[in-house]
Amino acid sequence: MSLRETWTEMSASPGLSPRTILTALAVLALVAVPLLAPQLQLLINLALAKGLAVLGVTVILRAGQVSFGHALFFGISAYAGAFLVTAMPGADLVLVLLAGALGAALSGVLVGLFVVRYRGIFFGMLNLAFSMIFWSILEKFYHYTGGADGIRLTRPSVLGQQLGRSEFELVLFYLALALVVGCGWFTLRWLASPAGQLFQTLKTNETRLEYLGLSPRRVLLSGYVLSAVLCGLGGSLMGMTQGVVTPEYVWWVRSAEMVFIAVLGGAGSVRGAFIGALIYEMVRIYASAFAADIWQLLLGVFLLIIILFAPGGIMGIFDRLIGRHRDGGTRA
Amino acid sequence: MNLTIFLLALFDGISYAALIFIVALGLTLIFGVMRILNVAHGSLYAIGAYATASLTAWFLALGFAPILAFPLMIVSAVLVGVLLGGPIEWLLLRRIYNKPEVLQLLVTFAVFMILEDVQRLVWGTQPYFQASALQALGNVTVFGVTYTVYQLILLPVVALVLLLGLRIFLRHTIIGKLILATTEDREAAQSIGIDADKVFLFTFIVGAILAGLGGALASPTTSILPGMGANMIVLSFAVIATAGLGQIEGAAVAALMIGLGRSYAVYLWPEVAVLVPYLIMVLVLLMRPEGLFGSPGTRKI
Image 1 (cartoon, each protein chain N blue to C red):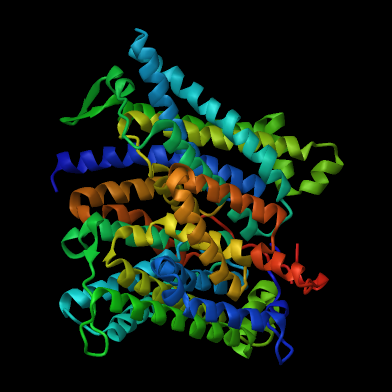
Image 2 (image 1 turned 90 degrees about the vertical axis):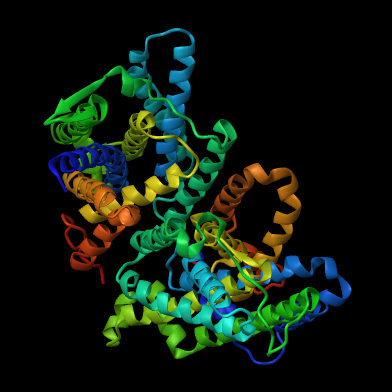
C-alpha cells in the first residue's frame, strides 16, 4: 500500500517550509474557534479527540500493519476514567486523564505482548478479536459496567475547582487542542528518532532489523504501546466531552472508523490524522441528516476509492498541490 | 453435572461446531487458495440467513409445505455465492492480488462495511425468526435427552459431507486438481495453460456459497439480526487461526474444540461462554503460533 515514506512526512529541512507555516496557521485558527465560531466548538472538540485515536492507528500503519481493534484502548481508557469518577466523585480532570492513559498503556502492554508476535492478517484480526472480547465483557458484566447503557461520567473538577458546563467545555476544548499539538509533535519527533526509525523498519525490511541484533517484537511493542496511549487519550477526552461511556466505544465500527480516517487523511501521515478527523466529523454531521442509514456503506465505498485510486489520501493530494510530490515517496 | 446436562452440552456443542465449521470451511478454502482473508465472509453468512428466512416465509405464505425450506436454503446459498461472491472477486479482488496483505485486508474490510449496511437497508433492524425447517424434522430422544433432529443429525451430517466432499473434490477431480496446482504455484500453473483467473473466481464463489449455506442452515436455530455477521467473521477466524490458516481438516477439529468448549461453558460458567472461543484461540496460538495443524512458513531474506 502506498503509505508515505518517512522522509516525505518529516520536514527534514529546518526553517519554515510551507507545511510548517500551514500547520501553525491551522492551530491558530483552531485556538480562535471558541471565540469566533462557538457553534463549532463541540464538533471540533470531538474531532480532535477522534484525531488523537486516529493518530494511534496511524503510528501502527507506519510499521506496515493495520489494526481493526484499536477502539479497545479508546474504550478501556474512557471506562477507566468513568470508574474513577464513579468511585471518587469530583476527581480532578488531570487524574481522569492519567487514569485513562495508564489503563490504555497497561492493556496496550498486555495485548501487545501477544499480538506483536504476528503480522498482517493475524495482527489485524487478533486486534479485532481482543476488542470484541472486551465488548462482550462490557455487555455481559452489566453489574459493573452498566451493560449497553454504559456509565454516566459526571463532570470532573479542574485543579480543585468545580466548573460550570460552558467553562468546563472550554477547558476541555483547549486541553484537547493542547494534547493534539503535544502528541502530534511528540509522535513526529518519535518517528524521526532512532526508536521510531527502527519501528518503521518493520514495514520496509524486518529481517534487517534482526541482523542488527534487535528484537522486532520489542520494537513493535514500543510503537504499539504508544499507539494504545494515543487512542486512550482520545477515548478519555471523548468520554468527558460526551459525559457518558457505552460499549459502543469499543465496537468494531469505531475501530473501522479510525482506520478509515487514517487512510483518508493519508495513511501514515501525522497531520493527515487530524485533518482527516476534522473533515470526517464535518461531513458526518451534515451528511447524517440524510445519509444516516447508509453511512457505513458510504465509508466503505470511499475507502475502496481511496485505496484503489488515491492511495496517498488527503495529504497525498495536498503534497501534489504544493509540489512536494517525490517519486520515491510512494510505494506500490 | 449430571448425565442429562452433560449430553445437552455435548449436543449443543456438536450442532454449534457443525455450523461454524461450514462457515470457516469457506473462509479457509479462500485463504488457502488465494491467500486473502475475506473479512466480508461474515456478511455473506448473515445475508445467507436473511435470504433463507425471507424466501421461506414467502413460499410458506403461498401455501407450500415447510419441507420446501431445505431446497430454499441451497438456493439462497448459491444466490449469495454467485450474485455477491462473483462480483466481489471479479470487480475488486482481481485488482489487488499483487498488493501487500494489509491493503487486501482493507479492501475486504471495506466490502464488509458496505454489505453490513446493505443488509440493514434490505431487511431492517428487526430480528427475523423462521424455524419451519427445524420443526419439520421433529425431535429425537437419546438417553432420555430430547433434541431436534435438525441440530443433532442434519447439521453434523451436512458438515461431514462437505468436509469429505471437498476433500474428494480437491484431490480426485480435474477442477480440484487445477485449484491445487494454482495454489501450489500460480505462474507455473498458468504456463501450462491453466486459467488462474477462472480458478480464483470459481474458488471464491464456492467459498462464498459455503458462507451463505452456513447462514442458511443457521437461520432456523437462531434469531437473525444485525451484527451477526461481525460476530461470525471473528468466530470463524478464531476457528481457522486455531487450526492453522488454510487447513481444511484442521478446521473441523478446531470447530469441535471451540463448539464444545463454548457449550460446556454455557452450563458451567455462563458469563464467560462468549469468551471461550477466543480463550481457546489465544491459548493455542501462544503455544503454536502457526495454529494446531499449520507449519511455520519459510521466510524470504
